[in-house]
Length: 334
Image (cartoon, rainbow, N blue to C red; front, side, top):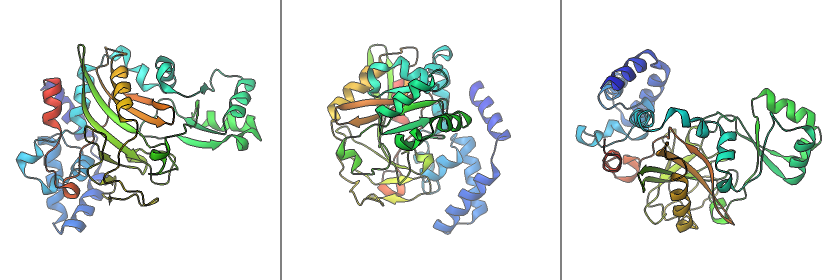
């Protein structure tokens, strides 16, 4: 209760009136309900259900009754779990992508370079070895600062390439992953990943949710970066449409026409084995959202999120009007 009280006080100080106004206006247009009524309900749900404004919008709280709302996991609730369960002294292994790559070297399946320590010869050799590279801000969230580059263009002026990357804090260079052709069929511009959220309880690893994320023309598949997602069943099949940050719902991918409904993730059993192995690596961080890419040679981990986002089905798009809070409670025991 003390943690919740502190959180509510902090939220009250940080309320973004612009976000509230934008989302309530959009819901007012789509539902025909008065904007002030929706805005007041969003504020009420922020207090009663610890639902962020985007949570309210994404999971159609405006269309749910009180009992249904109580079943939804929210980002603030997930944050409470992360702060309570994941040891502070071990979090940096996950929040710094360079440290993560070093710690999980056996599972990442790609070459990488830290521009803060690599010399010009090492940078030149790295660019010569890989046709395309990804530049990343090591401590960024939600795909911010992630860009892909053709190595040939960078090699035309390596010094300028380095200067520009350092200026933008894109200290980390990675080999661009070649994904399984079946995953690329969804959207070829980004590496389309899976978010597998796990909780380790002693020797047992429990999977809380399995998510299929897709890009929509950009370099990343992140929800906040223009991407979309849907939930997978236990067999790795998408049984429901995907949706994006703006409320768009997609049964087929808008760029490629690939069917999302019924999509079977390839190499599914290997994905499960990888997620289980990853969850056992750092027992001090038991609650993690793993981003997993599937290459022709097998699944690899892109990153681990100790303060993972929350993923659930959109009720108005799927007819599923209950969230995953009971699943989390049963697994974690809070």
